[in-house]
Image 1: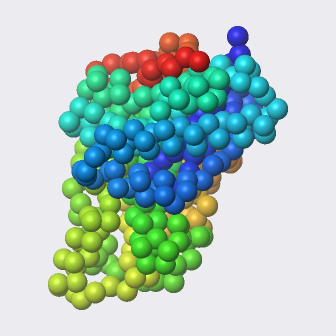
Image 2: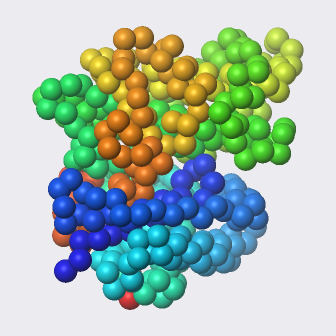
Image 3: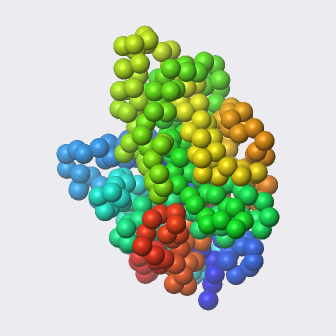
Amino acid sequence: MSEIYIGLMSGTSLDGVDALVVDFAHSPMRVLGEAFVPYPAAVREQVLTLQPVGHDELARSALLGNTLATLYAQAVQQALRATGLMPADIRAVLCHGQTIRHAPQQGYTLQIGNHALLAELCGIDVIGDVRSRDVAAGGQGAPLVPAFHQAVFASTSVPRVILNIGGIANLTRLSPGLPVIGFDTGPGNMLMDAWIRRHRGLDYDASGAWAASGRVQSTLLQRLLAEPYFAANLPKSTGRDLFDLPWLDGHLAAHARQHGPVLDADVQATLLALTTHSIAAAVQRFAPCCQELYVCGGGAQNPVLMAGLAANLIGVHIETTEALGLAPQQVEAAAFAWLGWCFCHRQPANLPEVTGARGLRVLGALYPY
């Protein structure tokens, strides 16, 4: 039976869907091909409007789920063309879906995308809903990638951190002799993307150029860093439910009353500093012996952000996961392909010490073709 899986990942950055074709019949695994389908602006807006409580949510989420399924199917089809493979060559597609609400403290996390329709469109078994079982077992349902990081990136001798900087930043501590821990550190690119979209009409700050043109406002930065989430104990996870533009606007208004308004470029610079400072503080608190830090996700392509990390983590060797054999933009989709492999082999794929679940669980639900 084939051991080739396709991982689909669409994260909080809302840029689109990554598809990665991975063959797990080999050790190490082999990446066979990839594809990316960008989200149309209308889809991005529909996702954003569904995240707060609003009118007619059930119908809107169902219709958006159908739209997402068609985009996911396009990514699968592009990935198949890139590899010359046929649907029959693929054991399963693992589709993360698009997170709309993440509220493990209330016992649920919601990722939408019509998996039954995706199976119909692709002609391949689809595995979805990978977070809910961990939440049902008392866990956060996130992050799920630390188990993959452990399987692929762990060293027997060097304490490492794997850092993913997507919309939200999350890290995994891989220290020989210590249990794996992983958690969301806070905002990654999400607030910076939202701010530049509001003020300059751009989807993201290419190479961090706009942030580099501004000046970090230390009083504003300290106000943002005072958010209780940063000081919270593990396990913990977060998302747009907390770190959104209304959260930022509230802090900007409070800051303006005391210190006056802040230039837009200075806000962008301060948001980048928020990401780098909160990550560095998390590393220093939870992985103080870290010698090597490997970055993946969209933030790895931002040289200003990478320089900010280096400035805040003196003595830590910092590179992207390219140095470990996997391109930064491939890591999350590869992790979800691996979760598909785990499901088909009925292997538990959560780490209770990471998520806080009561024990190991097989993650996901099958939508057979």
